Amino acid sequence: MIKTFSLLTGLILLLSPFNTTAQHSKGMLSIAFKHVVDEQALQLDSAVYKNALGQTFTVSKFKYYISNIQLEKAGGKKIAVPGYFLINEEEEASKQLLLSAIPEGEYISMQFMIGVDSLHNCSGAQSGALDPANGMFWAWNSGYVFLKLEGKAAASASPGKIFEYHIGGYMAPSNCIRTTSLLFAKPLHISKENTGAVTIIVNAAELLRAPVTIDFSALSSVTDFHNAGTIADNYTDMFSIATNEK
Amino acid sequence: MKNKLLVFFSLAASILLFGFAARFSGDTVTRRDVELKIPAGFPKPFYDFKNNTISPAGFILGRKLFYDPILSSDSSTSCQTCHQRVAAFAHIDHALSHGVGGRIGTRNVPALQNLIWQDTYMWDGGVNNLEVQPINPITNPDEMNESLAHVIMKIKRNREYVQLFKRVYRDTVINSERLLKTLAQFTGLMISANSRYDRYIAGRDTFSIQEKNGLQLFRAKCASCHREPLFTDNTYRSNGLKPDTSLNDTGRGKISGAQTDNYKFRVPGLRNIEMTFPYMHDGRFRKLKDVLNHYSVAGHTPTADADLTKIGTLSDKERTDIIAFLLTLTDKEFLYDARFADPGRN
Image (cartoon, rainbow over the protein chains, first blue to last red):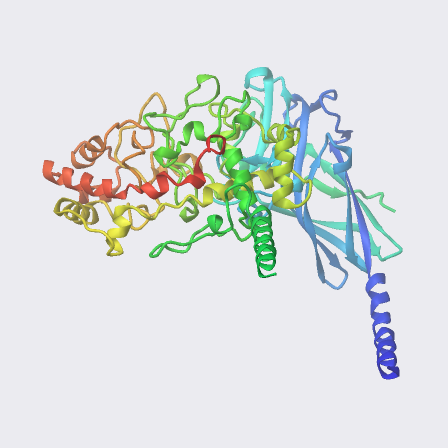
């Protein structure tokens, strides 16, 4: 009896330091997405913006998937953060992510996929952010729409002067999976006591320029693989870290 | 005393039995009814239910959804409107699919059978997983004209469905993933593998001389695309039909984006072909005779698959023999399988 007891105590003593470090070693990272069109904040329907050609436009919808997030430590070690996130201008809560179970450490950069990896484009019915009922799934050519930008432009030749760019596709003829890498303004310390925080500026104007300037009168609708890669190349650099981060 | 014991034991036994049946089987569907059995000689299926464990309750829910017009915008059209059991779940005597408000689609309704051996779905192979296939007919304006979100809203308001989902998943969550998965439990078990052809191959039935001759001709002239035992090689090919300009359907090309894939369509499996008329992707042929006529005469489009030349000109006798063989692919066990019947009409 005494033997068992001491054995147990020993075990508990042995395990407890591990336990506490295990609890101590995880922290959280909060990411805020701030949508803009160049210098102006993104305001659905009301605000009028100009593209590189001086054509005016308004935005009625802006949403996109973020996935396969990786955080990089100073030494180059990468931490994968699971999860699929649908960021939607219309839903405030969707623009604020709180990632948990991040190992303690100093992080210098992050990478993520704009869109959904090929495996999860083929995995059948899914729920949460990947629920096809979210309206970001193509039924006729299975796969997720990675990004939607819709609005109106006076120069558009489409009925109702609308434009819509629905970008998706995880394989040939148009693989639109893109990844981006963002360097933090200064190393981010994450620990149990210290939740890291970054703000990511997302500039929707980047969809319409560099490498290819989008002319609303020539291209007002992208809803399948035609021209999708062009827009995806354009928006790959629309993310940046807010530099005034403390 | 002996009698009392007997009564006690038989009572206990019946409680056990019925309790078991009620717990593990919903209505008339038992565990054994929903067991996935791979027929002898069939390859490994593409869809394996790994993330979608089949249960009697899941199958029952999938079946109810399949037969319920609640999936359509005006509650007029269910899956079975176009997928009729007596036709191996094709649409008897309809060239093109039908939908809400009398709308007509652009393609012939394919039979639903042996679906788990398909790597893609639809005539153009645009759908990559059995579970997400139903999103097409549900959301297509020419078919059910609904949104997934609205279907889920209607289902959540329906007491019977709330109970049925709870019985399958043991909690109160209802979402499109679960709806689509239970539909896949129902359609995935639609397996046809007991036709006279199957029994003949297994040595349990005989063929007439005509049928044997038809099989031989079939293997020489048709089987390079319609490969046994599923009677398809899961590829897309141009069968030399002139495109119907009113439909202007470019088929596989629309999915792959490759010009060389234009006017290619899935090589369909041929099981239960006796019941799945009319034929071809646009349902232009009403009789098997017409199909064989098309394949055996010249005048195919320039893009026609090279394998078509293997067919050559078929004599009248050869055509009759091939058709006699094709009729051995009718699987009455599958066509009259009570598990797949409309639960509202049981």
